[in-house]
Amino acid sequence: MLRNKFRGIPWRIGIISLAWLLMGADECNHAKNEQTIQLEKKMQNTQQLMANQPTSKIQWSMDRFLMNERLDQFNNPNLTSHFYIILNDGTWIHLYIIGKTASTSKRLTSTDAMQNFPDPRPEFTNQQYLHLTEAPDEMGVWGKSSGDAKVAMTALSFLLEFGGQYTYLYSEVPLKLEGLLRPMVTLVVEDASPQEINTFRARITRAQEQYISATTPRAVPQGQ
Image (cartoon, rainbow, N blue to C red; front, side):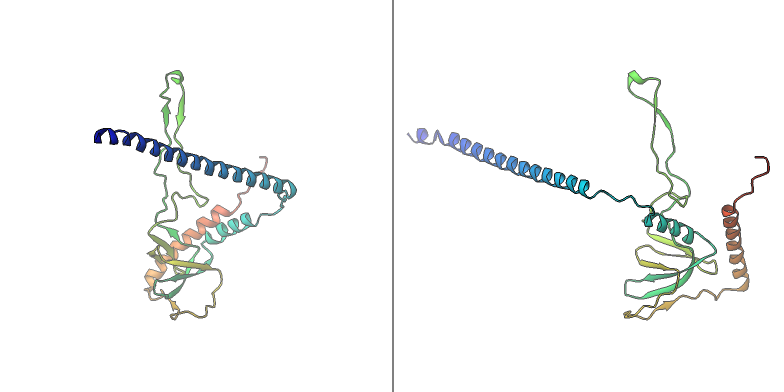
């Protein structure tokens, strides 16, 4: 009799578990349906707002202006910038650099090579497909500005490299900062020998000549 008494228990447990699963699935479906309804309402409202308030046709893009100014100013070897580095202890370091910094993760060449690959599908035996590679940025280099270090050139053409984990700030004019936790530290690099200074100045002179040559419009010969 004891065996007969417990014989139906597994079936009852199975039925109860199945009921719980069905109830849970129903609740999930209800939540998904509610999310879909809310999303459709938001999309309808957005479309109505776009129809009532269409995007203005601007004649000037401040974004493009600032990007162009940044490219021109920071890549001009004839201009210097005030550069500030904020250390972890709150110390601000101020120095003069030429143009801007560059990340050491940048590269002069791409690590990818453009290659043609035959299509593996039999019906496209004579066709090929291209492997997309990384494109250079507006400054002619590859890679992202996410390296562990930055490199810059001081006003006297000395190279300077520092850890990329620090916060830094550019400015075309010196900044008057108040309320600093520590005194401002200004780096002076004029303590080099005359021979070293002349060598580095010759380097930046060559860079300036290359910049002028690249930015000067060439005269078009007559008759062309």
